[in-house]
Image (cartoon, rainbow, N blue to C red; front, side, top):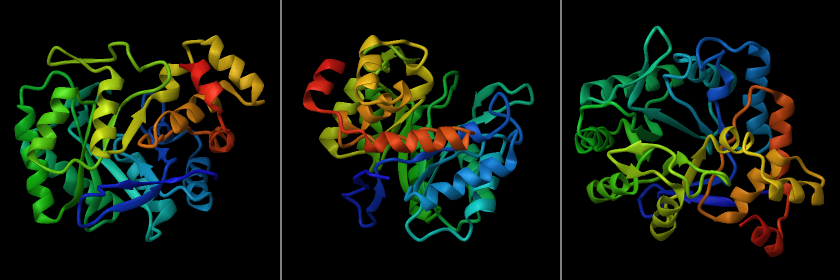
Length: 293
């Protein structure tokens, strides 16, 4: 895998260095992000291939499955390589009907962290994103304070945020050190209103600019899921030029667009996983990037 490294929490006493191409586990679950994978051996093999290919950043959540991806990670990779960063998320939960609900009261977040520690077989979670989910009546500051409290207790090494508006990010940074931001972002999701939270535009460029200013890695989610259905002839043209797929060019664009972007494409297919890895070998020229602008 041909990719550079990125520093997480570079201003802290415990900075982390990871390859700037990770893996998101959400797609390892069954249909509807629920239950066991259709092909469990293949799911375990993908996780093992992450390590073999130099990927040392894996994104998960205990509400994927539920608990499915965490258990798969532990089964495939424990005891973990010393340089592996497992990033999880709290703030949400699933109902039996598979709907997504906020789970962000301080006692909820504490319960989720304890569950992640147990299922991942960890004594401390290296990086945790507090995920904002619409419909909550819990103030953002209250949830964030609970995260920083658990960091002080040693349950969490680094705190990040997910699905946040620019206003949320400013609030979080005023309360403590924010290591990473995980938001929807991609070639097709830069300027449009992605999600509405608190009446604010969740468009990606403003958040990316804030991340770059403060040297905070931006971890884009759904970058392929949202980009691929939106056919863009510019992407198709560059894909043909480089003898690559459109998915690979979307990932290569992320890597070239900003040194503070850490893509985490996910898939349940070993073949697609290997194709995604090849995106790190694509060298887009300045002319290519200007064309894709």
